[in-house]
Amino acid sequence: MKHIIALSLILCAAALNTENATAQSQSLEDRVTALEKELQQLRSETANKNRAMPAGKSGWRRLQTGMSQDQVENLLGPPSKISKQTFWTSLYYGYPFGGEVKLNANSGLVEGWTEP
Image (cartoon, rainbow, N blue to C red; front, side):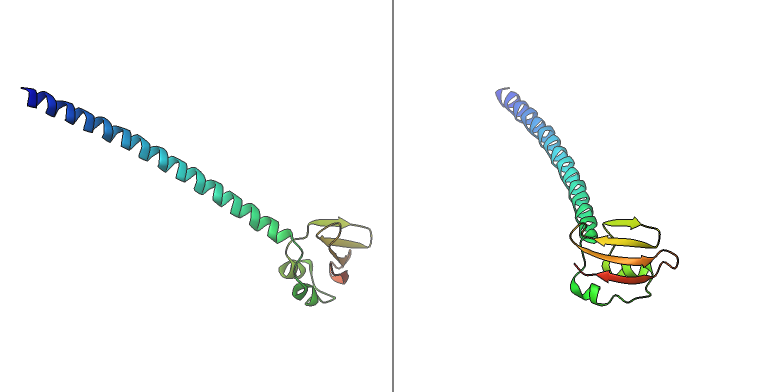
């Protein structure tokens, strides 16, 4: 009889340990999922910040008058600021101390630029 009681206690303890281990495992899985989402968000934010940073000299050196805004953005990435005036549009990279590309307001084509 003592053996049956001892065996019953061992089985109960094992069942409790299994339930506890399952709960801990689920908790860890939830934490990993949350961390993976956070990592993905940070990667996305970092990529967006990197796109807004001024391009290296090689991108600026490949600029040509007559390029469209899309062509400029393919070389330099999206500007950090766009300012539209009467006669031109300024694309700023690293505003206020970075570079600037000036587009003709009518044609939308590059007229000139200042490297950062």
